[in-house]
Image (cartoon, rainbow, N blue to C red; front, top):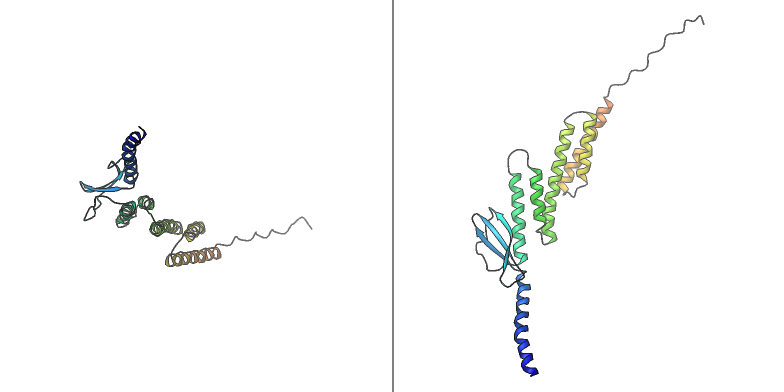
Length: 207
């Protein structure tokens, strides 16, 4: 009687194990669907062939040939580039850029960067945006043409110099810092001198 029981147990256990195994595999699967001018990315759930909506990318272009199943290594770069392109699109808008919007999309991109090299690409752009913001604030402060304005501008530029900039960016910031320091020195040298105290008249008390 023991063998039939063992066979019966195996009859139920093996299929159950296969279901659990396939469920684990499905959790690593991603699926791409193009719907109504957007790309939907679905993620496998802990159930064979079951899916849940992972993210929607409005306006994104789907791959020319959509496969049945994608891996994380295939899907995340698509999402990363989508948010990078969204940030670039804001920069192309005429007028003062929406720095907050740009940083929002860059930070979203970073969360989908699966390698250090990819993340560095977004971090470099974030540093560039922070440099642009600090440089703009410095220009506004310096435009007041006062010593305090120059000193405030210098503080912004010193903060920008601490960012992880490329060689050209560092050179630009350092040049601006040197220019401001020269303006501060010139303004101090040209500051009106306080007149010396007038000489008191002699005491006429008969002495």
